[in-house]
Length: 182
Image (cartoon, rainbow, N blue to C red; front, side, top):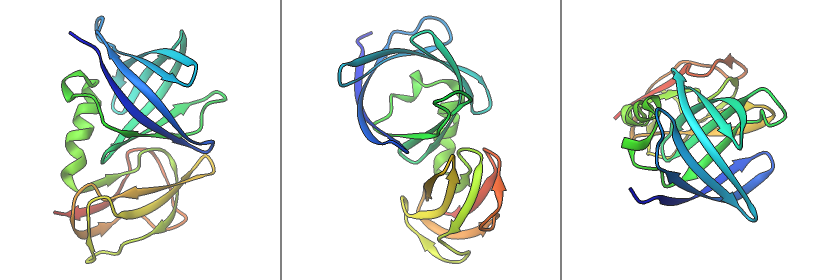
C-alpha cells in the first residue's frame, strides 16, 4: 500500500505550526506515522488503550494521550511530562479504515449533535442557549485547559436542545456538555 501524506496545522499555546504527516504501513495493532516540521522528522506509533486513551510512541518516547474529534479537528491531550499542554490538529484526516478503533467511533459520533469535553478543564463561557439555532462549526462553549482557551464548535447544524454545564464548572474529559438537535 502506498503511503499517504497530509498537511496539518498544530495549534497550541506556542502558536500554530505546519506539520506534514505520512501514514506508514501498519505493523500489528498500532497505526504508524512519520511527521515532519521544518528540519525535524519524527516516527510515531499510535495504539488504542481503551475509551479515548491511546499510547503514543514518538521516536521511542512513550506518552499516554487522550484523543477526541470535534468536527474536522482532533484535540490531543498528552498526560504528564513537560509536553502535557493540550493541542489541536486541524486538517484532512486519514481514511477511517486506518484510524485506531475508538477514533473511528468518535468521528462517527461527531455528527450526532452531542458535544463532549475533549479534555479535562473549566467551562469559561456558554455561547449558545437552549432553543437557539446553531450552524455546524459555530462556537458553542469555551473551555480552559492548561491555561489555554478552546472554543468548542457545533458538529451539526440545528437547535440547541440542552446545555448541561455552567461557566466556572470543572469537567472531566468525555463529559456531555451540550446537545444539538439536528
